[in-house]
Length: 460
Image 1: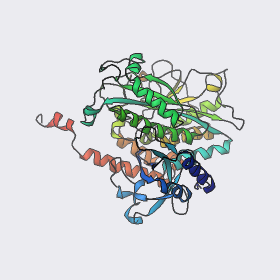
Image 2: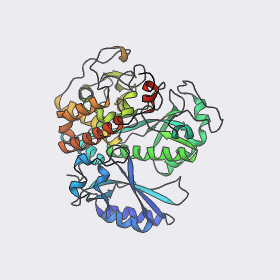
Image 3: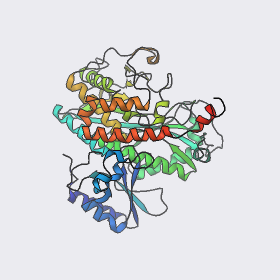
Image 4: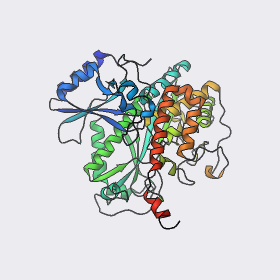
């Protein structure tokens, strides 16, 4: 059972922060809901310490909204409960200054608990915590990193629903060609990246290498490997907020949509995963083979359960536009060594660096839930000693393999019916998540889109 952090620890952290930051006047309390949207409240300085000592109330309907913020009454979490308050308890270590704000402000992450202190069923962070805790039966601990791709977009065109690449900040050229690893893009947007890395340093977010991805305005930044999978995802949540804020400061839009352009590559969330034993040693390390037995079982579990978790890895209508052949997005549950055409890739590093890169999730996925689903697959593979079969050699797009769900409705049906998902996430979480996304899907497809009129207005 998940309980709030120790109050003495919370009190000490809040008091220390207030003492070290006497100018802070307002503090954002941030909660990431099941669909991955950041919601919350803006507190005054005087409210911070009470919120850290006693938690802060928020209506339980905040756990039952679709991506537009509209209530999903079908979950039974709103009127049936009188939209009762739950408590948002702070996540220790996340209270930080906001370096991009003109008014001295700070922020921290919170997680939902009921009034008795028990972790809320529909809380994504708790879903991950429960799965991480299951590795204790093997005396293992997940080690993880999150790598996110995103697009920088021209602000005006993006807000008008017709995105195009932005003009560079240092040189006002608008890039329109495929230019993977193009250093000029990094130079053209250097003012944005300079501010981004400075702000990340101020917030103690461990950003690693930056690269210009395959399409105009598409970027990728990795976050440092963490021995705590929850910390890795907490930092991914903070990173997304940071990127969007710094982009706005420079008159840009930063988007983590899976596929903002029809003809250019989509954005993925690559999850890098290994397992550490009680001595801290990576159990996947074995320079004698590409994949030792624990790594093979882990891959076997992720491979055999990937279709069940696609509703989490690809949670939106737009998500499924990303999966195309020769797109650097996977289209089947397969695996290989040093091969970017597969969904489960063992990178080329050796020794302690040996791990698996889970490539199915889009950048639009909830980091907590995507990591939870991937780690549930790892645990399932270890527990049941699932062999992944032969690895892919060469072009994985052209080799036969079991398909993944190719649309939103099929993924949601597979998710709701999955015995595996119910075992690891629990019936109540599965029902709540599936209901929210099914209602959201119904609402989305009930609305005529601009393309409907382009295709059908006068042609039929």
